[in-house]
Amino acid sequence: MNVDGNLGDVPFPDGHAASYTHVTRGMCKELARFRGRPEAPELACLAQMDWNRFTGSGDPAATACSEQANDMAEALVTLTHESMHMRGWADEAYAQCFALQEVAFTVERLGGSRQEAAAVASYLLSLQPFMPTDYQSSDCASGRLLDLHPETKAFPTEAVPGPPPAGLYGPQL
Image (tube, rainbow, N blue to C red; front, top):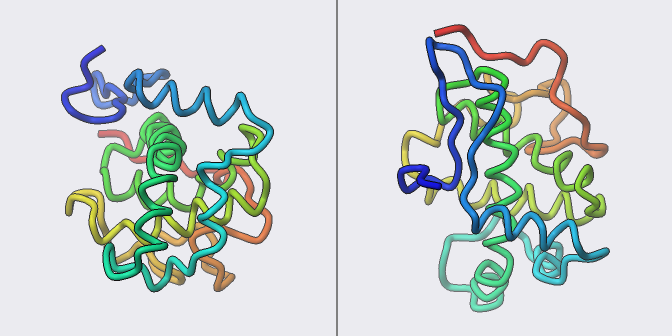
C-alpha cells in the first residue's frame, strides 16, 4: 500500500473524512507487536527519562531510549493521529496536537499500562520540535487553544486518559 511517504493516510473525498485509514505495513507490525505482549520492553525506558529536557542529542541514555522506543511509539501516535483525521480534522497540526493528547488513551485501550501511556505521550511531545512545521502549532500547549483539558495543568494527557471530548469533530471542508 502506498501512502505517499506518510505513515498513514485518511482520504477526504468531497471534503469529508473517510471512515477508514491506511497505515503502512511497518506501523501495522509495530501495533501488532505492542498488542501481542503483556509488556512492551521497547517502551520501558521512556518512563525513566525526563522528556521535558530532551533536545535530540547530548544525552546518550535518552538518545538510546529514543532509538529503542521510537518505532512503537510512532505507530501508536500514527494510529491516534489518523483517528483524529477520521473525526474530521484535516489540518495536520490540529490532528497531531489532539493525537498527542489522546495517545495515552490509545496505549491503554490497546493493553498498555497507565505508566507506559503517560511515558509515550511525554516522549512524543518532546519530539514535536523535530516534526515538519505543518505538524506543529504554538497553540498545542497547556492552556492554549488546542488544549483539550484547559481546566488542568496536565499536558499532554490527563492523569486518567480518556476518549476525546464529546463533540471533538473537525470542520467540514
